[in-house]
Length: 545
Image (cartoon, rainbow, N blue to C red; front, side):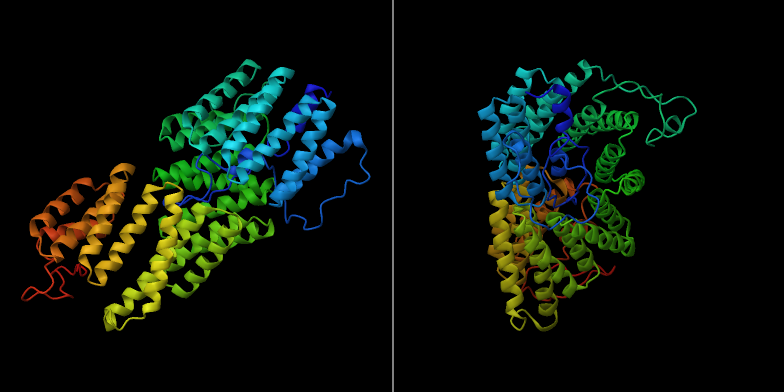
């Protein structure tokens, strides 16, 4: 039976090291786990360059008494290489060996690793079961710090499973346990220090105090902060991030500091605090570069690229995406590559570089499929369908719908059909609504107003539940236009008024413009005397029919 200090140090394997941070998010299509970075719960540590493609080491000459540990280590290596079958085989064999020898702590460690594998495979319910068993073994052995890590890991898995209340409970228990072990909350920065001058800056605070479990405590706080962001408890998340950052500073954990700064940058980006987000991303990049953490750098570059798109710095965004893609490729991170390619495709679509945009989307989709990432597949199919629909619309506008290339239309519809099926499996109402609205646009362009209205109303029903005000406002504006084109003036006016009433700061100017045009009578029924398909408002507004 091994000693507790050995257990606590060995947990810095698949589920223990300070995290690297991956952001597969954008405002509309987050592809990473919903409760934070999967690399974080895996605790994959620093990735300093390309992963070896050599065959995993043979264990033929390994003594029987050491075989369990060797199998576990090889399983961790295979997991990092995304060889899930091989990793599962090694974990199962190691677990059987530890059970045969009565090594409870060895069993617990392998269960933690296998739980991480289950998360990678997208089966959080099985991960929860592994973490349950590991937690019970750590508790029986009195391994308190390991118990805290198991609670944190189970909290992440519960959040992935949709059990948000259970996740909050686990994170709270983990944090309370670390406090009981002597990890008091860090003191505030000294007056006159850089940290006092700028509360956001990762500057010096009080001299470090003995916090033997400070890094693990910081990871638990960081995980709870991520969940609070998801629950829209942003003040609580900000407090957790600040405390975690101070703990990582006190323990000299630069990788941990970087992960918190990256997460806080994501939160601020979501709050439209562009300046604060940019500062956090820049600091995180500096720390990731100092620790040669290529995965951390890549994820932060992707996030900063998204931010630069928001700022209108498209050239800067493309540089960040290109650099991030190089790093994800060097580290053989399939899903990281896919996320950057999709983002770069979005950028090229904005730049109307349609050929290169489709090429990026094609590559992203293939990689998402390789990584079994359904949310990423759905989001990419949706935007590729949008691009193909745009190509069809551009040609139809010039030569008419009948003369336009039907292949663009068929490909767009195929993309939408696949995306809708995936969003339904994921129970993503907002994603389904976006696809239904896009299909409604195609039906309207083809002149099938009844089908368009049915699709828009289906999208509205889903958005009424999801509470996305901007998307609901845009859908109501399309409903208003469709009623107006069909000659139903009263229904059109009612829908347009609702669209403006539901609008918020995220609602596009185009949506407001459309609703106002309906109210002003500038969208008229097709076939009415004097109605023109290309009619424009005196102030230069775009066409609305």
